[in-house]
Length: 334
Image (cartoon, rainbow, N blue to C red; front, side):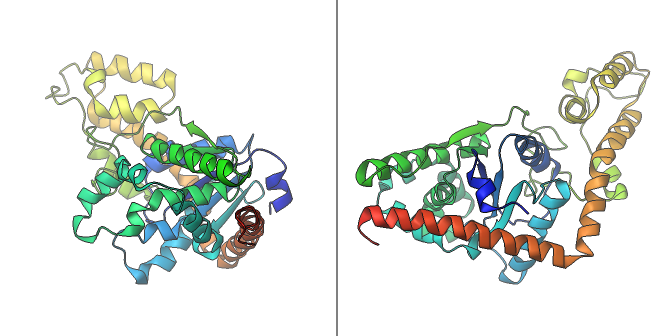
C-alpha cells in the first residue's frame, strides 16, 4: 500500500467523500472516474468525511456500516490503495484541531456568504447547527493538513475551495509560510442529469441510477427514463436533441459511432424508444457489472478493507500530526 513518503514526494490531490450510501451513476461519472484518471499524475488522499456527515440529521446505527460501504464502493470502482490513501476522517483528530485554529482566522461574514450553507439552511431549517455553518472551515483543514496541491470538486464546492485558499493565505501571512494554496480541478465531464432529464441526478430526488444496481433493477430504472415527449408512436420521427435519455445518458456512455446510428434511427422512426433504451442498458451494464463483481468479491474478504482503512488512518495521521505541530509551533502553541 502507498506510503507517506510516496504521497509527499510529488504533488498530491485530496478529496473528501461523505458516507451517504447508495452512490449513483452521477457520482461515478462526475467524481470517481475523474479521480482514477488523475491518479496517473497525482497520488491521492481520499477521506471518508464522517464528521461532515453528522452536520445534518443522520441515523447513528447506520453510520459505521455506511463508512465501510463508502470505502468498499470506491475500491470497487477502481481506487487503488497502491496509488492512493483511503481513511476515515474521525480516525485523525488533527482535522478538528486544525479546524479550530482556522476558525479563529475566519470572519463570520465569509461563512455567511457560502451559498451551500444557504441551501442547506433551507433544507434543514429545523436542525441548523454550528457544524453546518462551519463546514467549510473543517473542509479547509481536511485539505491543508496534507498540503494537497490539487482538489477535484464540483461547481457547488468551488466557493469552499476559495475559502480554503483564503485561510491558507491568512495563516501564512500571520504566522509564517506553511500551507500550499490548493488548485481547483473542475471535471470536464458534463453534469449528469437524472433519468427524467430535468435536474441533476440525486438520490434525494429519486431520479438516480444506483451504482450497484443489479441487472433487473438497472433495466427497470432505464425503462423509466424520459424520452422525446413529442414522439407519441413508434412511427413518429424523434428529435434526439429533445430526448433527455439521448442527450444525457447516451452521450455519456454510448460510443460515438453507435450514437450516430441511434440518431439516424430515431429521426427516421426506424428505431423505437424501447429499442433505444435496450441499447443504453447494454452499455451501462457493461460499466456497472465489473463494479458489482469487485464489490461482491471485496465484501467476502472484510479483512482486506479493514487493513486498507487502518493503514490509511495510521499514514494520514503521521502526515497530519507533523503539519499540525508545525502550525502550532509557528503560533507559539508548541
